[in-house]
Length: 97
Image 1 (cartoon, rainbow, N blue to C red):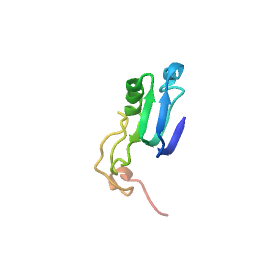
Image 2: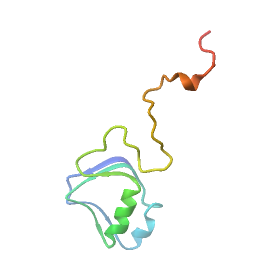
Image 3: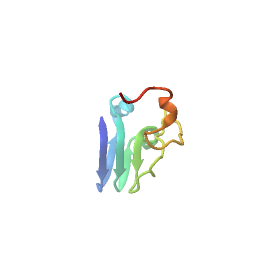
Image 4: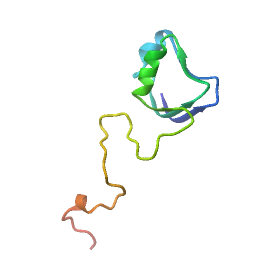
């Protein structure tokens, strides 16, 4: 598992091969990871690993996604609200003393 990390400037960021391919998505988990190496992904089945990366919270290359870009996850929905002080959610609740 690798969380909130950057792998930068190496010859190869990631090599998954052999029996390790069976761990994609279970024993191998990336969340909030940026890969930026000469070769980001190499191994026996580059396409299977790339499919895994495409479905994970991973960015590849020197640039980061623009602010407000939704992760590739169906749970998240586009929302026009920015900020936390939105009247509609607090409704008729009483504030103060």
